[in-house]
Each structure stands twice: as structure tokens, then as C-alpha cells.
Image 1: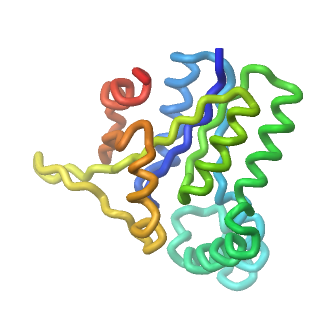
Image 2: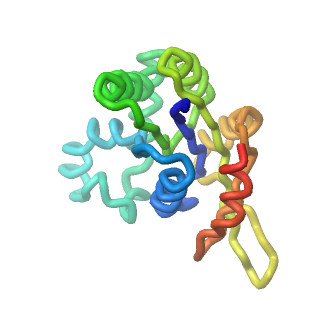
Length: 194
């Protein structure tokens, strides 16, 4: 059976860290094997960890404080993308998969922060070499206000600029993700009938 790389495109503050454990559990139950989380942006946090601690007195890993230093991380991400032709974060994922493939034959990945179309293009090309399916998924979070549902809009300019293209190539255009609870039947319907 082919292994899988699920690439989640989730706007900031839409609950990807809440979604991941439920998705991982469902993937294990449905497909078997190991399912590993890979957050592309974690490298940016590692790069800026000491600076953010000394400048703001905060841990870069504390999501509740992210609004304080988000601009710093974003600027660093833009700089590193420019210096590496968009490959800075992807190279870390490629290295991880190549190491894992030498040891494991049942490992699958869920990338929780897919942001740019080149990330999909490069991973798709490498996935053919590795023997993986690649499943891009664009997720919208809904806010339920007295039975009127509203889509939570992208928070940052980079999301507004890049997400329409990502949505257009996604195997699943959106998975309804509701504030306050995990609508498992909807996720199953959209994701696990591919």
C-alpha cells in the first residue's frame, strides 16, 4: 500500500493544533501505519528562539503569545524564502523523509502548515520517488453564530495572497471545521473517501 503525505493548508488561528490529534487518530484507524506530524514553520521558530526570548521575554513555542512576535517570524520566513528560492523549509522535510525511509516502511506524514504552492510542487515530485500519495487539503474554519455559519477569514496578508491557488489544487477544497467541536462525520466524508 502506498504511503501518504497529507498537506494541510489552514489559516492562522483556525485550530490546526486542535485538529491534528483527531486527524492522526482517524488516519491510524483508517489506513494503519505510523502518522507523524511535520510543521514546516517549526524551523523558523528554532531560528528565532533565542532572539525572541531575549527581545520579548517570551517562548517562541507559546502559541498564546504568538501575536507579539508573529511579524518577526513572518519577516524571517520571507527572508529565508527569498534567499533559498522558496526551499528553506521544504529541504528540512525532504531530509526527514529520506532519513525515515531508510528505517521505516510504514511512515506517513501530516504537514500541518502548508502555505505556498511551491511546497506542494516540490513535495509532489519527491513523493513519486519515495512512493507516497500527496493529498493537499484546504481547511476552512467556521464560526457558528446562532445557526448562521461564517468562514473565519485568513488573518495575514500572505494567506490572502497564496491561499486561493492552494485551494484550487487541493484534493479537497475545504473541510468544514467548526469552532468548539470536531465534526468527525464531515471530516470522514471529505477526507477518507478519497
